[in-house]
Length: 250
Length: 111
Image 1: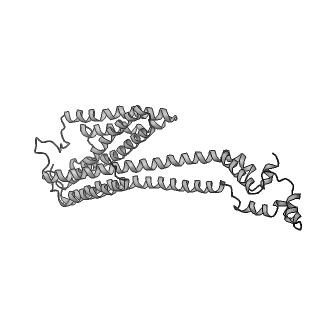
Image 2: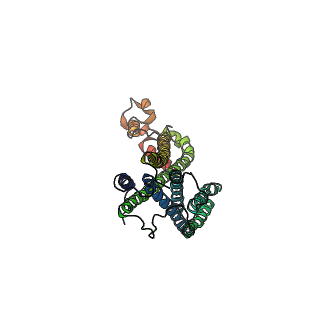
Image 3: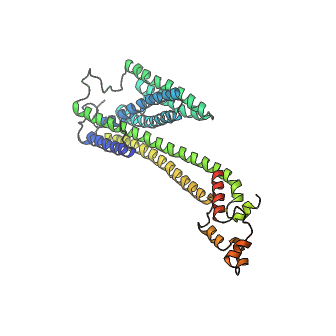
């Protein structure tokens, strides 16, 4: 299967996300219960879904790293988790804004959905100190992979546990018992979700490309350093010296 | 809880979307700064590589020296070519175009 280029990926993400936001404000109807503030939902929920799935993807990539020992899988796992943490920051901030407008409070501690996401976010926030506390690159990658797998397994468990808990105030948008989303809202939501997923993929690929360029630069620097060391004895003989000078010693 | 009026809710919705935009722009700006640093480092390495490369003699310099009898050319200016050839001391193996080429090859092997 041919993978589209990063440029095509980024352009499609920008186009679909822009189309999704246009649908949010010009197509999707106002929510009968929440009114205009419900528009935050089209941003907050796709961010949360991409973030949580990104954490799971990070765990799957970490499994690939432990199976193969190839450091590229570790880099992919790291970047997936990194982007998911960035998206997680967006989830927490946009969720707080929505909570302030809808509930009158920035944060509610007795709401399982909020607290569980915060726990997952803080769990992944410890990934960085764990990773960078280890100097040896191989051990660092191995330990980070074990962490990513364990935490990645925790994410769906946490999600199911929260769904099973009786939520009091957090809306359940995909619940079918109360009718679920009407078609126009669902279409808008799905377009936003697709755009957000494409943005996540594009940013992951962007960061991976930057990491690959940085690694190539380090290799080049090491190679040039080695060249300089090797060439130093030769330069005493060769550069600029008359050719007879080299042979006079022979 | 009743829905907020549009003018009230609009501020929160705008804030949420602006936060998202700011988050993505900050991330992209940080990545762009990193890429700019990589680009700068790459340019510096390219300069360093150019500087350390030994400056080669012009390709016909050795041949020209051969034609003039090498470094000793001035001493044999008035001597005919055949006599000059007969009197010419045996040239050390590293002089002239062949010597230059041999030397270049040995340098390349070292590197």
